[in-house]
Length: 78
Image (cartoon, rainbow, N blue to C red; front, side, top):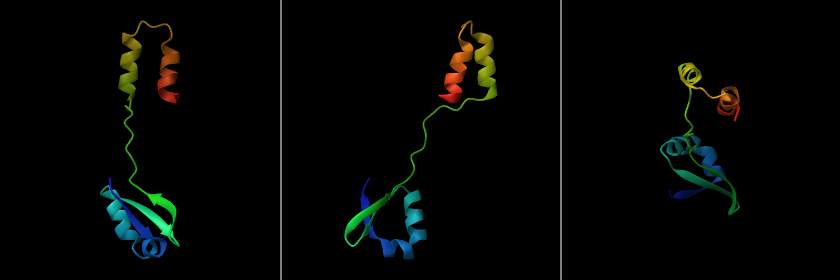
């Protein structure tokens, strides 16, 4: 990923364009007085599996594990 350098005044003027570019995967390093201030980059999507109530019911009825409750707590609450 290529990071573009942008001044803070330019960011202020072109916030909508920078926002749209970020959604397309572009990153920006924002500078003030030629010094880096902060970085704008796309948010990475979480790769965690999402469980539904059906998943938990299936686990409950198919499992013969005595520690099922503790394992479910780990999945839900980490």
